[in-house]
Image (cartoon, rainbow over all chains, first blue to last red; front, side, top):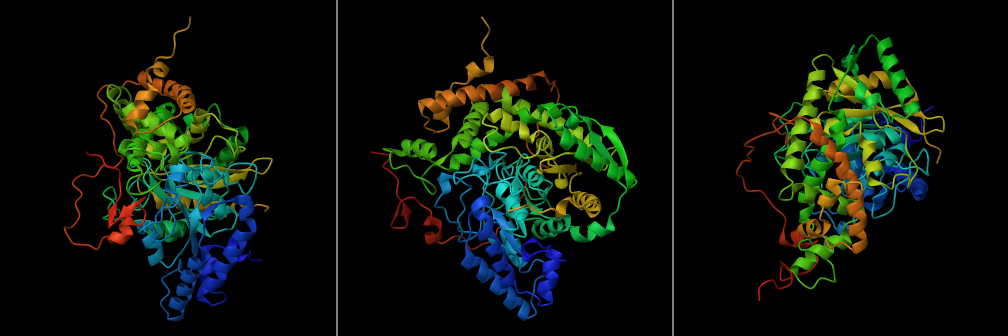
Length: 487
Length: 100
């Protein structure tokens, strides 16, 4: 029994398109119909352009009719987080500051997806400027978790995760600065991958914290995720931090690489604050890998407890600098109350930014201000070195590390009003960004009341193929990924 | 009397908001000062780490001397570049007078 079109895999849909059993327009119409049926409950999108999506689908069908189909992604809808530029479409970062902004160009990932024939579909909701862990910090209203509508989908890429889980798109892209792909993936029972820093171009991604940000894919399966990663990865001269790495065939690697792997279990990730149901699910996954012949080794990342502090210095410092460009002059919101140039800056920013963005700009400005730089920013950069060395030391003995993605399953909307409590949601994901490593969240269970649980596999630099193969090995032997939400 | 947290009292929110060109309401100032005091307390524990001789990391994989080929490429047209301007006239962005 095959599933409804909007829940099928890229491989199934691609085969159906190739055999002319369906057209790209029919597929897009099915995804649009599904979106229109559930969006009043999920609110994964800030906006979507039905006419533009159907025109892209029609162009895909014409290519195929001419025998010029571009590969397995041709005709496949992919949702993009509303922080990634798409020519002629809104680009809001879920902020009042950019409420009316229309992108004049494509991000490199957008261009590469177009070149692969994929259909860029909709602008997905997020925490404002990617700052948050619940998608509650959106100026356009929160997104709901498709598996528990009174709960958050995680964040900041909550719309990207929820849309994939709810069948409102086949796959999607998000961005991850401290866990913003992996944590929502774990909350929404989907796969989400944060690539090695530099593997995917950031050109056309609205910057939050430039030394930590990476764009990455979401899918309902490891294979779908691998196929999207293959399309967007690779060197880009428009991003000076882009790495000249060879891009392997990630999909082929799923079959070719079979382990057995040496798996490290960092003991600092299984301590106080870890929900018992999450712990049990992750430990069951560890036992599965052992049963497959993998070696499991206890490892230590001793500077883990400093990760949150380092992150909230470095990320806010970089954000205060990056968001200085939103000054009401050249683009974005301009206050009508301003009497002079300086007031245009300060009032436009006051009216355009939400509370969390303001808090982070204040904190970032403070840690960079005269007299505090050495005590905060420079010290944080040094501790960042120690956190990175912890990982590299551990990788002398193991190939990959396995941890929970988040300390708990999805929480209720409004449950974490205190900023510090929200920041602690990212405790297991932040170290990966500080160290620049790749990591993937994979569905590994459900709580008794039906909320998804994810595990995180952390790889070595540019070890995405190994990570995806390891995730695929688990996925093939379990059925979590096949459980759909009731909507 | 308990000593006030040093980090909380160090944060002069008026000064920092002025540096950030961010007009905050009195309520926001009070709220943020208290919330950020909590965050700064959490950050204080970095002072326990011995960082003697440790080099700072700005990027996990730093690249240096990254150059683009010096080739002319098409850019945005004036119309496209001004599309999102809050106020424009004669192919220019309109701003208040800053020099008398």
